[in-house]
Length: 318
Image 1: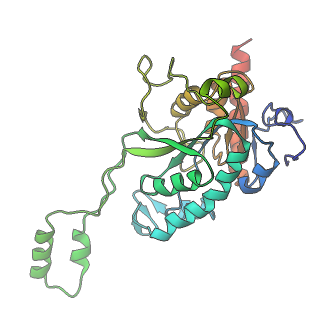
Image 2: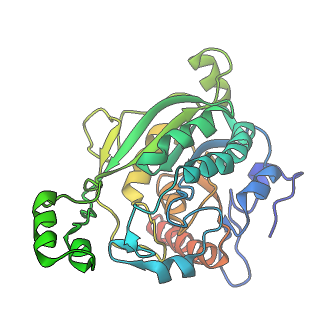
Image 3: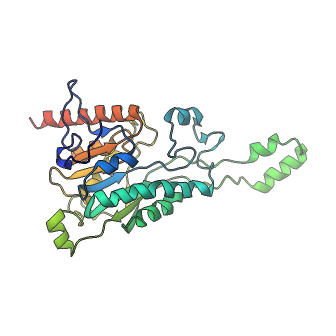
């Protein structure tokens, strides 16, 4: 199902989901965001919260879930320690991929509206430049803090496999290495670029016209009672909903609550919707949601998931 450019955003099936004959909502459209975004009206989106491909280890614009799963074992991707298969060209390709998408974000976002874009730590500069070059102001870089698993590898076994060294030479080389490992500290954070579209007038004037551009710090979802900071700690989700890089709903609810208005009809957009976590978080925070997901299987699962949340909330509300 395609969005037509002539449709008002309030009339799209994704912002106020209608039910198909089998009872399912259409929250996530199985489309490439690079073309689907062009169907949205100017200044129609309040918040963009998204997790694009990271362009490492095959997780790029040619993402193939089946191939990636076939290459992945615990701590290893394609025969190399996870995170070690890297060339500087990956960052440049990420920037080139994301920049035209960010240009569309600039067109569809309301003045003063925020973009929150997840990024792998070592490529966050490329994400920020792509968004900034599209006209956004980079306001901050947030860090989602979690407890990861160490991925650094000892080199001792590589030394033992060498056939050009005697056992004595191998022992001496291993001793000289002193237990050193590949250059990977234990991962404990993912970065989130926080960008803002230019305002029209003062903060108050912009808010009065668009209900965007200011943040709500009164009741953060995480770490309640404390003023929200740019380091946000929460655990990784146990349930992945069939997706390799699923984000925790509490983290997304926290961000949605701070960076968007709490009126019903406030539209949150996720251009890389994956398993639908942003959609679930948006509904639970009382916002409308629109997602694009290029993989039809993920889009289908996301719709089923978000539809179940909508049914659950409707039942709870009588």
